[in-house]
Length: 406
Image 1: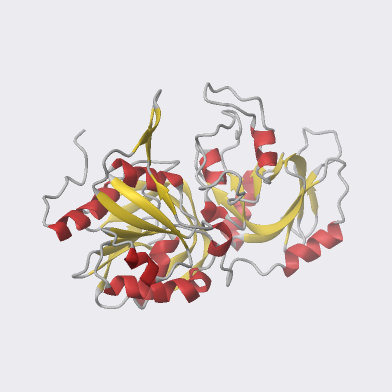
Image 2: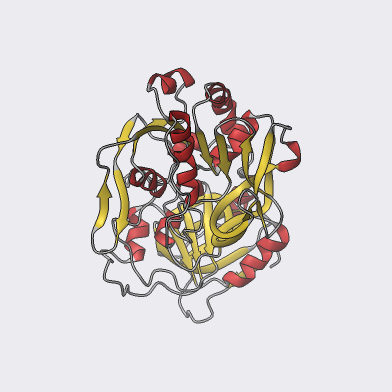
């Protein structure tokens, strides 16, 4: 792809109604779906074969446009259950989506809405008819791309203005996006995991109290913790350590989220440092993992293309086993920067990047990937039991088996 205009929907004889304009001036034409308008964001690709609704509503994708490498997206429709951000009315998550095939009618018994109107209701701009293999190859070669995605049903675009917007957008480095997706106030969470033909469960008598700092938390994380007997208090990203400790929690959770951990860490890291000193069991995922590393003295860095998908192999050095995991991150912890009292526990088998750490002698650990799946493999569900066991050990209680019996 060079600095020119490409019509990548040869099957279409109509005027293109959507464009993707890259920062280098490349214009990719297609047909529009979902919301109208234009928005700047970073283009990444996701290799998951299922779970597009969960992916599009993951707050970690704020400020990003997702290219799905799987060609058929939308054929199972949308529903009110497969949403990962906390508040459906709060349009946090991906701002755009790039598809190969046109969105067809849904064919799934759980569907309550077609994908295109669902995208519109959530403010997500879609473009289809794109050669997503070529776009993915470009990202693999040149890295995640700054771009503008635009949809106009009349097909009227000021391409020079869109090129300027894409070229001048700052990108994700230096952006604190957690403040845009976090909860506005503290709240309680009691919903437990989904069971086929039964729906979501409900927390019974709580055994533990966990405070979850919401940098852009996914619902399935909270559901799994509730399913293990935890009452969860969700607090905004800017909540002070003093206010968190006032809840007298048994455990503290640092959630996933979008943006640059260095930027969010300006206010989050001092809080996390105080929480580390409290010796309360602490577990972080994704952005929470990155900011924990920074609070411990490590560094983070922007990745070339990031990791986005539900089929990434990761090795857990604590068990010497390999698991297939969900991933969604464009920043990573520099493992060489970790201090001597911090041990690397997980590593990506794709590129060797850090995927987990633990503090030696303290009940603190975190992972870069998403053990809750939603979508993806459940290989890493044991990490939630590992967190609960840190709480139980501090109480002097017997530990749970990390993995449930088959």
